[in-house]
Length: 398
Ligand SMILES: *Cc1c(COP(=O)(O)O)cnc(C)c1O
Image (tube, rainbow, N blue to C red):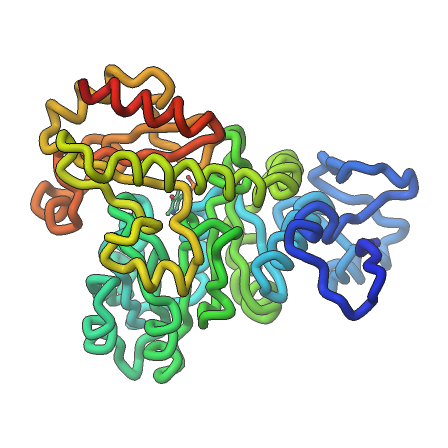
């Protein structure tokens, strides 16, 4: 059974940092301290009648198959839903299984979706797949509420956006878009990876469904793939779960178990990484060899007020522009601490050249339109010392 930590004052809510350590734990008869890893596909029943009853209706602690649910996965789902402030969550095999599941389960041919155009390459791919099956997708500049207003129609089923876009760190006004979407009854689906569960208050601000790639800040050490869809119990269990459990998008119990460990330290890590990101962006912003430094936590970010209102901090990602692909490649090849890779949210700092890797699939014209210039580098700030990271970038520019 699920057990809650005891608070002294029963009506005093526990701080998220406390809930991230304790919430949703289901202890077995052994009373194990750490969350148990139930590495099992199936569950045995006491009788044929019990099996029949489970298939008719499964209760909160009744599992039938790991593709449908598993006690370890359920602990992760309960804990992330609690932190996000949603009634429920479904854990998926990857962030993309979550994005695909959250959108695919909602629509049928002829439906209309409005999406911000500044998206992670794989998210754009999922929208292309939806279009192939007869869903109409309208793309807007996510930072422009006027474009959302013009694109949302009475028959719009859902709006979709990354609350902080990858890699140019544009911020979408969740409350503003939600007001427009809700006026026509459309669901607001937010990919919140860059905001992180630490700084996100997306549901409070009007999002209906929040999607994470747990691969990023939740794991936090670049080990496991995972994702999660957070929303109302009705959406998660009656709309998303049927799609996911039948199409095979469920998380591995092992990965869910790793993510539970990640959640316990996530707030400390993300706050430390954000502190370093701010220090690095501040140190580099007047660097003459850089054409641009983009960081949502800098006062000169075009949406700084919105960032403060929506997230309260700039997050763990910084983008810098060295002016040309040659300069960008030369700097990457000189970096010693920053690893050339394409993940993010890792304890190790990572440098990515979006235009030749994560966003290579797009045409040059679309890339430039999105601000993904040939000289742009995306930096994911890890847990190393901020001074060492700043020195590494400086020497790489030499
Ligand atoms: C990484 C990422 C995803 C996909 O997550 P995976 O776990 O790699 O499948 C989706 N959206 C954003 C914004 C991401 O950064």
